[in-house]
Image 1 (tube, rainbow over the protein chains, first blue to last red):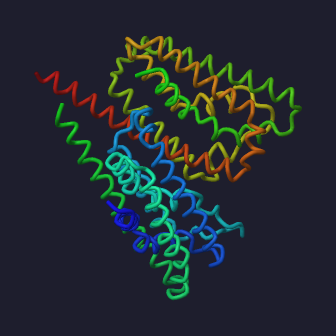
Image 2 (cartoon, chains in turn cyan, blue):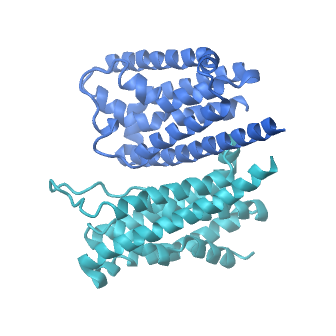
Image 3 (cartoon, rainbow over the protein chains, first blue to last red):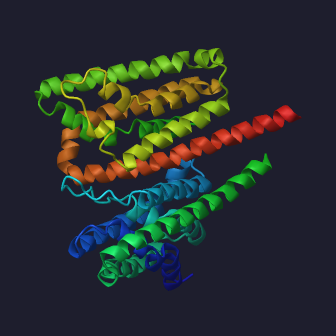
Length: 198
Length: 200
């Protein structure tokens, strides 16, 4: 596969356009400048996580005896935990004037951007291609697109307004639950295959 | 089941990187010599707890009639909840409410280093019969690595700063979630295999 096909695949798996409403509703309490700073930082973190997996993922998996299905299931559980927090914590505006701790790595950089889908995809291709340099450049290329989408995403808030964002948070909490359940089901299917072989 | 793999798993569960910031806040008012003394004392206590669990593990499990599957499931469960607390810090948990004064056993030795998750994993590993010497070696290796990390914690803090510490805490927390889920699924697998064997 060429670098461009790989980059396109990575971009689609990461799904920055679909994820950005959810990401924005996670950080809706910050001014737009701060949101852009947070998103830029998180996208760098997610790139680092992806690169880490590209070069060390296989070692880590064999060393820790981690199977592919565990990756998907744990990502799904994390997403559900976050989604439940989004749905059932409407009124946790900062009470004592102190803003809440801003999201750091979890959940934006991973598992939302560098989720189980992308990480397993990277591992899969790095086994197939035997040329990590290709995947490396494809990842970089995909990241330029992803970062551009993410950094322009905060303007969504300007269009929707504060009340619109609060409504969007509820809806996106539901969508994140769905994504999480889907990830768990995919992992469970893999796990059940192994279970049935015994 | 080799020495390096087991040591790495145990090292991750000890979560020494995540404990650096707690350790630094606990000891920030003490003289450097006293800090070093505290590290060794607390780490020795933690090691004693681990070794005790390792040696009485199989007796404890036969006394309570615990199966390997339930050990795996509960170790996975505890580790999972533990790592969720690392990933989503809340104002009510231990890490943000460290007690004042010099740490003695609580909270540095138990539960920050020898956490319930680590105890459960050691119980789990201590029941795998043919590998006892490897597991003992792995406990020692992981413990030694944690001692080194805590000993050089100030240098590490200066090197990567508080944001770097937070980042590594989060990343290790995510690895812990994956390990926990893997434990849990292994437990289901063991249970299922035993169930099928019993049916035959």
